Image 1 (cartoon, rainbow, N blue to C red):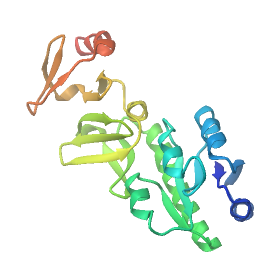
Image 2: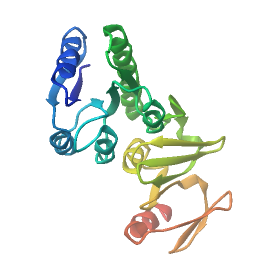
Image 3: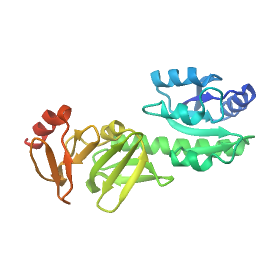
Image 4: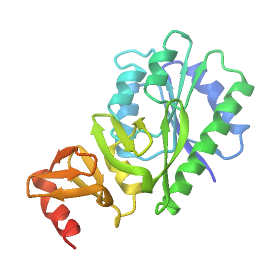
Length: 231
């Protein structure tokens, strides 16, 4: 396995340090580097990579704003000279936060974490009849699909409601749907995915779940939902 990564930093020397560390690290391949965050944003919206080293303080477009522009961001490791952005960064469920000057030992630990999460995520795709893997509460969590009641999309976040508790994760609703088995889940609205086994009743406008919650059926999703629910 080889993680493809992009480095975005307005400082040339900071990029060179990460490039040097990467050449010493097995399983890591630098795809592109950028000093201009706007150029990086355009590239990342058009190309898929596994990992992004992202500086925070940059002219014209900071790391937080760049991240918001990515509909399906890769794994994110922030690199910055500032300690005081850490809480905000981890609220975005990033993988790691490296403070400059970055030591090779600290860099290596971040890459080990990235490899571990990537393998878990890819593994969940092959075993998607049983579980999904998400980042929530600053850790990687395995959620059994049989425990999921419904999922709500909220801009960059999703709320996953299960029999036990609710999880919040920074991921697109579409990405979650791709991990779920088609025979067990259906998207009924731009903001909702429901487990077919959790539906108590429905009409052409709403779905009532077994816990009493009523969710709307979106016009775009109505035909697909009715076909699946009535089959």
